[in-house]
Length: 168
Image (tube, one colour):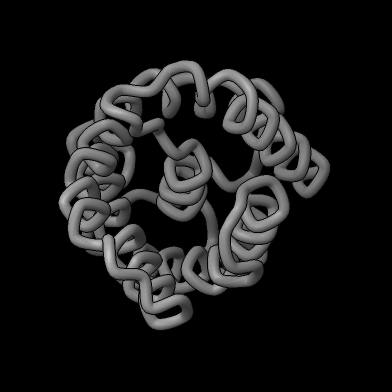
């Protein structure tokens, strides 16, 4: 049952990301629901379950967006691993923690993506894109509260086991 829920959430996020959020852009930047779901699930799930989920989220982003196929999958597993390392030392259910982790992970992800993209294609105009990374992270952080609230309500209504993580 949890995998059916996770896959349905990933498909819904893919649908919203590719249709609705393209029309809600500020300065040509749109929020990334895949990263927000990655942070939400990794902060609340067990490490063995979050690894598979992070891989699934990255694979869905590779399938539904343009770019180098497989790069998002690798970066999402890496970002999930970074979050799982620090999640036992932070209180993951606090709103400030969720916003700050989303901001930091968004910046790291976007810089790594641009770095790998520049190595692959030797693109010359990457400086303006690198300057947009903090704006993308800020935009992702702004929409974290309503998205986390919706995901939390959805998961608790289905009795999802990952939200029953022990809190110190």
